[in-house]
Length: 74
Image (cartoon, rainbow, N blue to C red):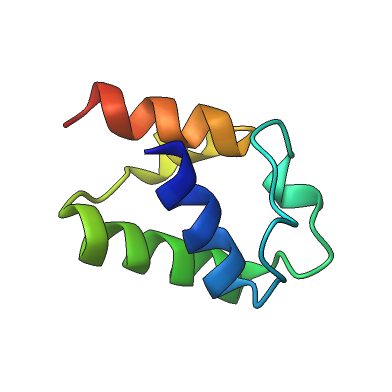
């Protein structure tokens, strides 16, 4: 799951492969903005069939946190 989330962020944010790490605070990425947020939410829905409630997403800090959240809600 973690690798899929890392690839998702690399794809959505147009980052080079290997530039997203599990402990990264994704909101600190230079590319992170409201469009990136919407794209990540949409891609998670598309790839995993799950929509993360906004309140829950606000509590997620790192790439690893997001992967863990998705694993626990599948």
